[in-house]
Length: 434
Ligand SMILES: N[C@@H]1[C@@H](O)[C@H](O)[C@@H](COP(=O)(O)O)O[C@@H]1O
Image (cartoon, rainbow, N blue to C red; front, side):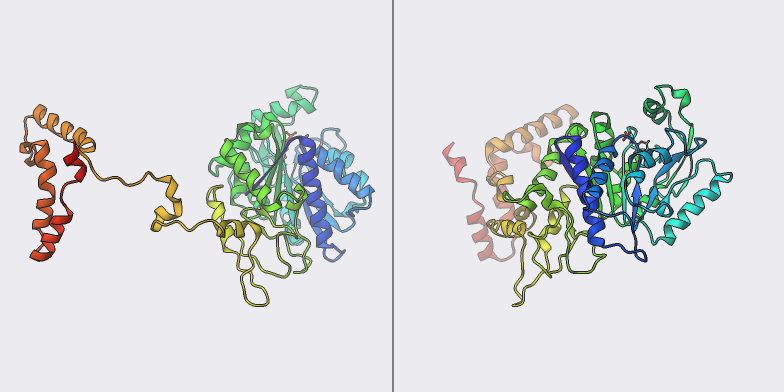
């Protein structure tokens, strides 16, 4: 899972809008091969819709061959109700762009058979060959779409009962009257979202900080269904500084650093946008653990090994070392990050110690009287208190230090080797200086 942190809601929204436009245009959708976009509602995506409308009006993107599937809808609100998600989508997006009405898919919260409505929706997504990019928001209680705490991570489109927290949070759209908020809804399932080829989640504002922390830094849990994105191989969370407010500094530093490392000082943040490449129109961005690759940072016509496992921020650094790209002379082609890593001195110690770097450990020191004394003292007082003497208890402190090399050398059968061992195992010279 990638995490993009922007200073404020506006720049986070603009990042997402740029990302979506880039995805659609690089896909080059046609009537027979449309781009399938999953869409959310709520206050968080409003800036994204505004920006998409502006880009459409500026001629930067067309929605003519885009099919949309919305995530959820309240049960019992007619589509014309100002707070229905159908109205929301019409007012904020659909009525401002060139998407054909037949390409718009919304759940019908008034359907006579709600279970059949849910099956119809899943079948229609499947018939469209799945969702290419699912844009999502995050509820204050960590919900993804309307998958409230406790929802199965294998859930599909279905009828749900809203949690009290959600009813309270969404009452702001219903004149702050909780009684006006519908109690039930239709929602795509967690699995429906996870089956999208790519997922982008927008998270804005301090009131989402706890949920974001739960979803990014803690384990995958049905109690915070947004955390399920950790299991998606192409999921990116885009948040503002306020939403990032409860993340650990280590997490923030890590995700910001990999963005910087990929873009470098001469590149703008837009460098993190998906690549347009010549590997085929449907080729999605080759995103390494260090963030989406960029045209400049990726040599043309090279294949890059990518990581596909849901891994922790710390573990994610490792796969970036394994680019398997070769130029015409069969020499490896490294990214700037890999060159940086390869330029680092090779650790001198062995195995795991070497991987961790020599500076992580203090130099190994020989045992001294100072370091042995406490354990001896503990052992001695213990034997006195319980009244049982062990073998070693009859030894004095100086006997213990002096006799240890003798005992080890005497176990060697080869006399010459034992003598050599004895010579080496003489007590620490520091002992004599004390
Ligand atoms: N069903 C929607 C969710 O899909 C959305 O993610 C959430 C967040 O809304 P907001 O962005 O207003 O906080 O709101 C509703 O509950």
